Length: 91
Image (cartoon, rainbow, N blue to C red; front, side):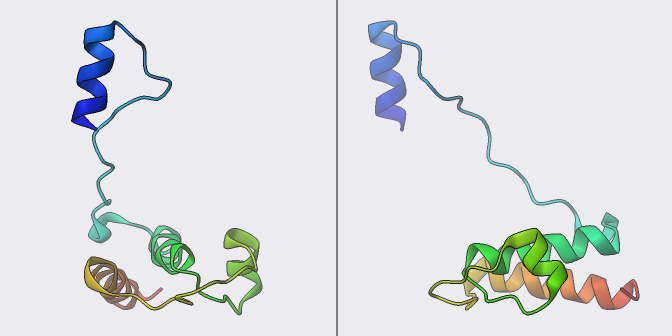
């Protein structure tokens, strides 16, 4: 990416996309139950989870794909954190 930016700058070219800082995850402690639900399920959706509820299917679609919701690393940690806050808030 740095090389692309350097070449574009030297050539005086405008890039067809914007470069911005990566989005930061919202602090789970300040999220509503709906926000916690959405954030948690968005992670599963990115990983191909086969949703069973009509609410999740309406929001994230019915399609599922490998790895079928299997999470690892930071995503597993984030889901654990979101679920902890859902329990703590009585969601």
